[in-house]
Image: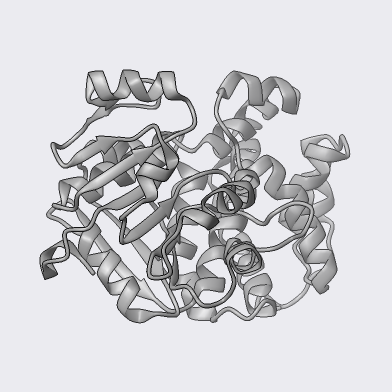
Length: 339
C-alpha cells in the first residue's frame, strides 16, 4: 500500500550508503514515513544529528518524515515494505539476518545489482533461496545517480515485480515532482541489465582513459547492449526490457558520466593503477570488479558469447594489457551485427 492510499505504515530502507540514503530521502520526500538503517552505529548517530549523510551524500538533507534507526529489528518491525540497498556480496547475509524479523505480509524490494559469487544467482534467486517463494518482491533499477536523486534533480527508474500491484504501489510512493518511476514485470531483465552495465562501464573508463575517443565509446555501448540482451534472453528476460531505463538507460549513464564509480575505476586502470590501487583510491564499493568475474562464469555456464565483458575480465583478473585486449577485439571474425 502507498501513503496516498491511506496506509501510513513505514518503509524500512536497509543500507545507509549513498544509494540507500538517496532512496530513503526520496520515499520521505514523497510523503512516506521512512526508517533508514545501517551497520555503522557511529555513522548513523552522526547522520541523525546532522540530518544528512555527510560521508556519502552531503547534498541530500533529510525530510522530517525520515528517521534514523540503529536497531535492525526496530527498523523492520511494523514496516509494510522493506527495501534493501546493499552491495550484491552482502545481500544474502542481510536476508538471513532479517528473515525472522519479517511479518508474513511484509513485502521486500532491493536496489542491489549484480550476480552473487560464487553461485552466479541473481538477487531474486538469492531472495527465493533464503525466504521462500511466497513473498511479494520487487527490484529497483535504472539510470539514477545517488547524488542527483538526493539533491532532488529530475530522475526516472524502473520497478519490476511479478506482483504488478506491488510495483505500482512502490512507484507511487517514490514518484514526486522530481522523480518518476515506471513499472515492469520482467525481474530477470531488470536485474541482468543492472549486473552487466557495471562491467561495461569499467570498459568504457578503460577506453576513454586510453584516449580511444568517442567512436570507440559508442561502439562499446552499442555492442555491450547486444551482449546484455543475449545473456538476458538466455536467462529468460524479455528483449524489450533492455531498450528501457534499466537496460540502455543505465548503461549509457554509467559508461559516460564520471559520477559512476565503475567508470572511474576503469579510468584509473588506464592511468596505470593496479585494480587494488584503483579500488583503494575510489574508497567505495566498485560493483563492476566482482561483477566481471561473476559475468565471466555465468556467460560460460550458459554458453553466451560476451567478448567485451570477457575482455574486461581478462584485464582485471588475467593481467592482459588494456591495449592488447582492444587489439584482440578488433581482430575477431567479421559477422552480422544481429548475431
